[in-house]
Length: 266
Image (cartoon, rainbow, N blue to C red; front, top):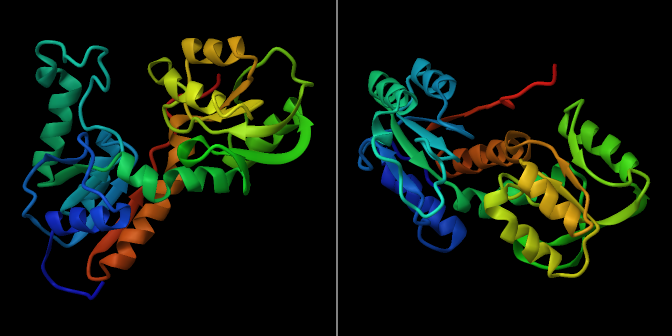
């Protein structure tokens, strides 16, 4: 894209729509601020955490693009937010920081997944050979190894020394991998696990984030699950997404803010 001096938030969103070939999804778009704002600097992060907002503000950027939603609670089954959620302190704190640094906040969720996040997670894991499924339900084939060996490999690939694993037999031979990346290993998203299972060609999941319900769903389907973390599975793609937008808008300064995994083993 040709360099221009005055580019707005809307123009950046239009570029994303061209990259995906469709309009923004219903959970995407401007969450705070004015879509007509002129943009000279953009920070991209996995979540609009206080650290990410402050990082964007300190370099005087105008726009924070976040993959996850700005406000809590993220999901409420049934679709109805609890009364007074806008005044939860965590939500007020984020709004105060956005106001302090005069930032627009945009969410790009499924669009960024489609453009590069899913593919970058597969790339990070060295997965290249697709032997089944399609779309986000692709099945990747690797040379057969034990689950224990695969876990060791995944630790090195994602740079995490300790991983949670749901498995009955660490010596089980595996070769066909499904990827419930991001939060698709969680109990609210087990239908995605089921979509992968329907391909009939999966003997291990490598997930982003999971929980007890999600782990048990996998186990009862006789599929072990290796959990990396929500952030670890999506940050590489968001880093690439930053470079994609930077190439499209050379007159704008772009920066990637790394939201590290929130938990640590003690």
